[in-house]
Image (cartoon, rainbow, N blue to C red):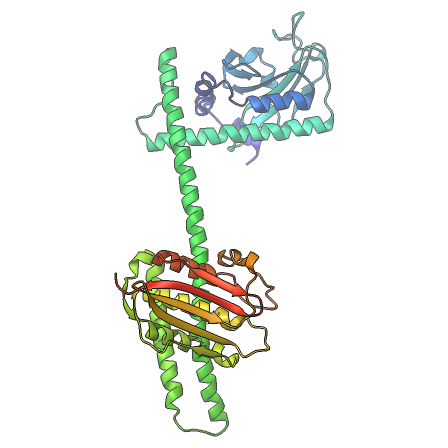
Amino acid sequence: MTVDTLQNKQVDRKKLIQSYGFVENLSSNENFLQEYLELATRISGVNIAYISLLDDENQYILSQRQANLKTIKVGNSICQFTIKDDQILVIENTLNNDLTSCLPQVDNENGVRFYAGCPLINDEGIKVGALCVMSKEPHSLTKTQKDTLVVLGKQIMTTLDNQRNMIQLIKKINTNFKPAACVDLNCLQGELAHLQDEVIVQNKLIRNQKVALEKLNKELQNFANMVAHDVRAPLRTIKSFIEFHEKDLERGNYSYNKDYIDFIKQATINLDDLTLNLLDYAKFGADAIKNETLSLNQILEAVTLNLTETITTANAEVKLPTDSFSVFGKKLQLIQLFQNLISNGLKYQDGINVACVSVQAKLVNGKVRVSVLDNGIGISQENLEKIFQPFIRLHSAGKYSGTGIGLATCKKIVDEIGAEFMVTSELGKGTTFSFDLPIHG
């Protein structure tokens, strides 16, 4: 549908102009659109600019540096000709133009001699008014000046349309709200104050919703990365034992290897348990996962089973505590914590020495002090703070794979436990991560 077609539709222009709250806002907001008007004069090289909206009878004018609204009859307006076309209207000398020479604002000694107007076309394709620049001397505009004024006019119309949409939203939310239609100034100001208060409230609500949505999207992204990171380990273990069994079959060994089947079963149970906990976490957050008394050794055994494929491929060694300890916490979080720390210790190696990760535990001040030590490449002192930032990688993906989410997850878990995450490291000699776990609630 073309602009002309929409313009020729039967439109109640008075009601349309009122829907913008134009009069009400201008009557109390001296800064309303003033920056646009200042810019218009600079672009065009003249000293007069205004914005107008036109209904069938009146033209409502907001002038530069003038807070009060001026109203004239449409028949006396130059802008009546601007809204009849889609293009910018430029009249270099109004006295020599048949359209304007007889208009009151032109036909006097100190009248308008130059006029340029850009039609303001709303989001429904209807020309509702114009952005105008004028001078009391004949003037001309370059093509660049004209094009820039057109762009500025579109921005002004966007501002007005946004305001109109906000007013309509307020009416939907507050059915008692009525536009300022009374002629008494006190009544008008009262209605305007109500409108402005509602707009402020809605703007604040929208900003808060935007912040909440951005936070939710970030948490969703982090959760997706966490799931992909933590679930892949038990899947690789299952795949590895199936491949071991396939190789036995290829060598003609058709005997039943119970160890392989037991490992696959346990890895599947671990994966199912991890998946269910992750689903609860996704639906209800960390609070949905209950704290319970857990065997630290059983947690570590489940983790090493999940990492069997990684440990076997690296021909690595993982040492677990010889003493048994009970700790209090969330099973899902502790599995994630140790799985990330041990897998990192196995990953960041120089390839020269046999990879070794040792988990040590001892009682300290009524808590279990756990340390995860590796003999890997180590971390420089200037990078110790960076390692806990999500998606921050200290090495190229070609050298060491990963997403940069593992240690950020560990830091979050340790923080939720209420413990301090202590890290010591030396380049070329390995890294130690330590933290305390409670033994009861």
